[in-house]
Image (cartoon, rainbow, N blue to C red; front, top):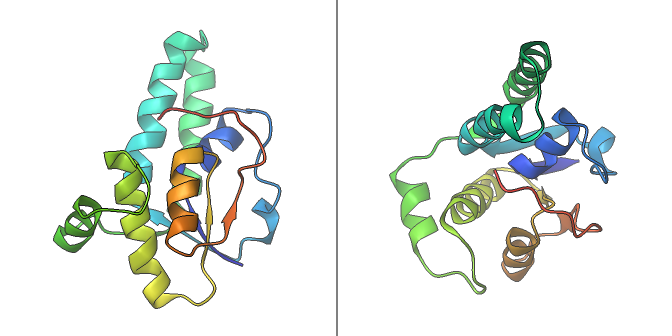
Length: 145
């Protein structure tokens, strides 16, 4: 399954959060924005304080994040992506989610049957509004990378 993956999906796996993506093992071609590296690594760094994680736990999670990110096909955050992210969308969406959605739209031009995986309700709604099948919204839990 060709799947655009946002950071909330990777972070639930890396941080051992509940309600992880049920279709994770069926993803054959994972794709995301380069933004995912920044979001995941910043969230792991913040988890050090919020979750009181020691250096070993941080190193383990950071290593897992980098390994998972390296397995993704990444869409560059170039001028075209930023211009599309700045344009209106059918629903309200924040700046980082707009970059993810713009990246997913460009990836969809290259990949057939691309679905979008997120646990972020706002991104999921915007993605559905532009024609994506969305996986991962069964839970109301939301991470804020």
